[in-house]
Length: 606
Image 1 (cartoon, rainbow, N blue to C red):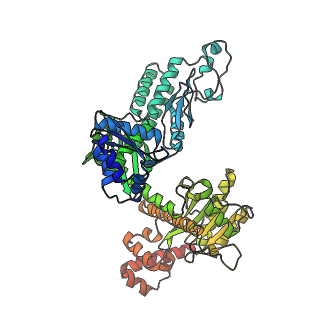
Image 2: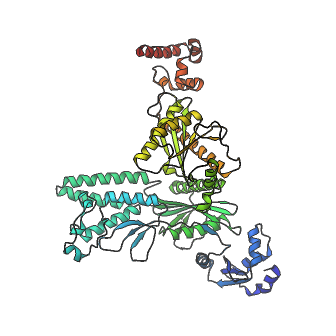
């Protein structure tokens, strides 16, 4: 539609609040918007110059305009959100989040079971969630089972069946994980009380659970059931410790939702923290695709509505960095300037920035937003270049790390389907190697890693990368041979500087094409194992885990010991220094102390 064509119908559009809808020639809905004044807002599309190509494309495709008048701008906002959710027009903001979220279901049945599910069925059962992390759900389920004994069997525990004595208690009863409702050993009322405690735990309301257990403990003590009372005391202590670790800001905060946004070109990132009783119970970050020069305020307003609806939030307050429009008139919008709420907002900003940078790293490998087949394309390419028998969907990489020639540690990172699998990362404090010996260190950690996988009957990686020279690769292969894994896994070395791969025993290396996705993947794996190893090493040093021999010498301070290591790289090199050079480095008195220490040690060795 052109500006001239619009002018012919402009007088038919009212100057009142409402929503407008743009349709194309095939009568497909292109866009839904809201306006305080419909005529002015719609007219702006045909009277001003837009900076984005997408806006020009939308205006060119408009064939028909429809509108709905409402009583207020807020009513227009409500209707706009409803229509976007129902029709998902092409040119409206698109929430790029198609995940299926897990729930915890309390089944509608006698003595209801509680279990994990991804399918929400309209069967009258109670569904708690959804949750952003399946791992978090399983952790919560395991946590609740430690404190609230509920049945896990599928028996039909009707009153009739229980009275008839059709069932017998199982091992779970004898282990204390169930109170035996199948034999009538637990009443429906007592079971329902346990379910309420489960609800409280899952909602982060540990205070009421602790209070309930304290009351029960006192009753047991009064009735002289001290063993049971002691078991409850231990549960209370564990719950209080868990609560202390979970509280992020303040126990005195009420339930609230925290949102932050970062916008870049036609993409926006929004982080959501769900806070209940001062505890962050859920966190989620999403990517949104903007279409028509939407502002950060418009993006965040849209995301607040969508995310609160998705996760069934009942909070009466939201924390945001600037004012936004919301659907619920009763919802308080807070823009904190300091205090606990500002700390929460800052934490949300930190999360959204990390998410944005992480997505950028993934896009370097062209993996973000791809199907599984597209993601594996780089793995097929790597398989072809290295002539592997299997697609390397599971890759592990090892690297040694030390500090100024001392304190060796090792790290292993795992990539699955070309993406980091951080739950499988491992770090190793070297146990059997004395001093700095990269070859022996590599042999030890490779042996420890795959001996454990074999013992636990876990799948082996298709590709193992040893970051280092041929010596480290040879040492790793010694462990592979000792474990009888030759032929079961492929092991390659990665040259430190040249980015060349080489197989055991080969005299020539393999150079992946400099612009290939497979080389980018190998680089990222190498960078990740370096980062992981260095971070672990730094943490160990900061905790004082490492103590070098020089620091143990009475009269030699930490600063002197570190300076000697920095200059001469190892304790052995310091020990071999001529007396004149040692005196020059630390002075005559300290040099004498060091030489006496080493000479005394040498005398003891004889």
